[in-house]
Amino acid sequence: MEPPSAETSTLDHQAFMAFYDLYAPKLWGLILGANLPVPQAEAILLSTLTKAWQQFGPHILKQKYLLTQLLSIACREGLPVECL
Image (cartoon, rainbow, N blue to C red; front, side, top):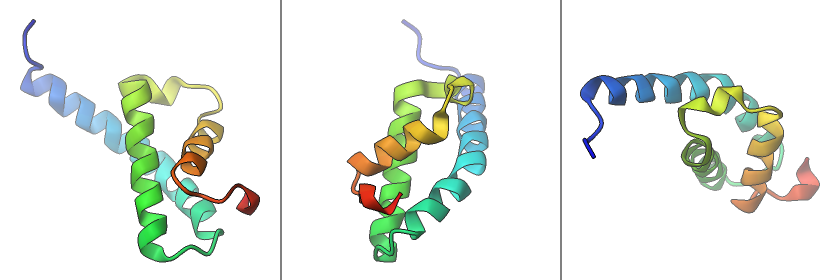
């Protein structure tokens, strides 16, 4: 098996950045509504987006109900459910 090429890595990075740019602001707003300490809120955001990317990969933007799935992951990462 060959290692991923630099071109593949660049495309994956660009896909992740597109995913991040689209969903991070929405998710951040919902996480901030929980009135958690900022470091904890940041950790939940980063962990949620990273785990979602690991689960779905570059095809994540094609997932149905992605924001709902992100919120489910965020709750597993420490976002209180009652805040939603």
